[in-house]
Image 1 (spheres, rainbow, N blue to C red):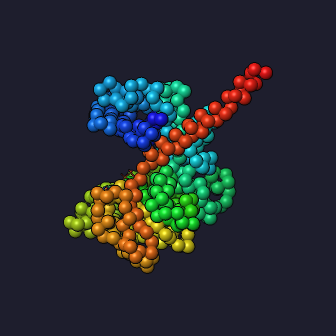
Image 2: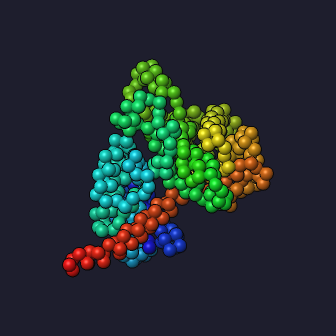
Image 3: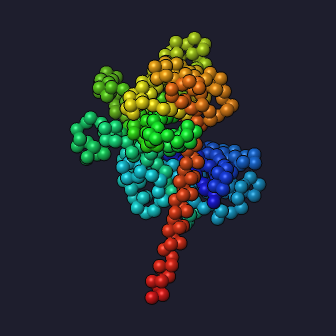
Amino acid sequence: MKILVLNCGSSSVKYQFLDMQDEKVLAKGKVERIGMDDAIFEYKGSAGQEIKEVTPILDHNVAVRKVLAALTDKEHGVISSPDEITAVGHRVVHGGEAFSGSVIIDHEVKRTLRALFDLAPLHNPPNLTGILAVEAALPGVPQCGTFDTAFHSTMPEVAYLYALPYAMYKRHKVRRYGFHGTSHRYVSERAMQLMGPRPNLKLITCHLGNGSSLAAVMDGKSVDTSMGFTPLEGMIMGTRSGDVDPGVFPYIMSREEISMAEISSMLNKHSGLLGISGISSDMRQIEEEMENGNPRAKLAFDMLEYRLRKYIGAYAAAMNGVDGIVFTGGIGENSPVLREKVLRNLSFLGITLDEVANLDRARGERRISGPDSKVEVWVIPTNEELVIARDTRDLVLQMQQGKDQREPDLVGTTAD
Ligand code: ADP
């Protein structure tokens, strides 16, 4: 079974094409600047084939058709016909309270996705546009949606409600949903495999990238996470502020005479590592400048480490203990300096560090805590596309089995 995984943004499509026999990625790439005359199309096949083009790409329909053309291209392709694509899996950002797991996309699911546009106005509309583009290009091919929010649907009320008037939740569904769920699910499941089966295993998963979030995962279920109603709450991120006293917003708005839209842009695009350092949102640059003695870069790094430490401490308290901590995402996987600093500052949890394993980037997935550490600490590279592809495969198989079981009845009914 071969599955195409798509992550459709407002002006981009990222894709991977997998053979589920051995879960091998046959091809991957991205389309950027959709809607522009100088859109970028990139494709890489597993045998080293490459396409890079700057070309007008009017919309997501054209982008999807270009991906299909590359996959079936005589010279660079990995399949001879689009018929070899069994199903398409989509990353969908917001599932609201409607979706607690991945689903086959049908008319009803599309209707619900539209109803959720208000909750994720930047993300869900392009996700649906991608689904419709595939419908047009590959009619009849089953599509599956995997939601960023779904893994956190197990959070209890105490964790997901804000202490606002309850009517705000009832009337407008204002609550914490959490994001990065597919990544937290992948690394927590992998950590459970690596650490061996234990009852009530308590994990804290730290997805640290341009966007960052932590999850408290008990017995395989998310019980709390740091992002909330939107992906702005929680950690200090590349350009996002994370937690801020909401009382600050009307104050800044009146002092600076700026609008709600400008405040929102400040919080989402000009804060975080970039806002504090004044240098960059990129952790590599922050670390480089910190080594060069730049005090604002050091402050940004220290603030991020401090916020991370506080969340780990909070989640250890929320679960009344912690057995394992997992680092993932661009920063989580690649910044030994941050991991070392935060783990040394958490020595009260009985954590010790294996310095060699922490520094050994080449080893990828690995345990970085010492043999005597009371908490196991792991680096586990995330793989959201694989989760989407596996869910799509499982749902398509279920659907096919369901059809096989129903068919004799239907035949019987007709014959009668
Ligand atoms: P996204 O959230 O967009 O998926 P990523 O997970 O790719 O982002 O993470 C991007 C972040 O990872 C950037 O801040 C980048 O600087 C950081 N990063 C990547 N490599 C390293 C490295 N070697 N050391 C420190 N930070 C790194």
